[in-house]
Image: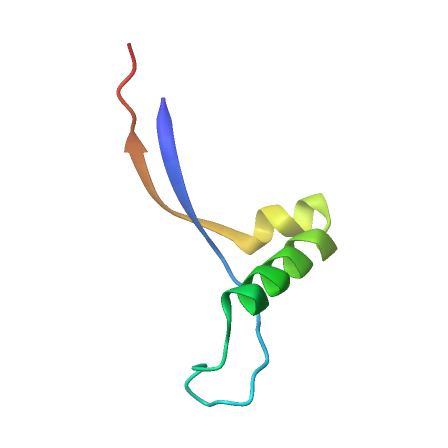
Length: 58
């Protein structure tokens, strides 16, 4: 078995250049909006697998 780590990009608009005003609620809403608006194929393309590790199993 293998564990795969993926990157998934999304955007949050805020007033502060350093994103210091971005809240966890804003992050969650933006992530959910991005994921829910993509088709199956777009979602597969939007996710980038950057690491894989073997998972020990019994």
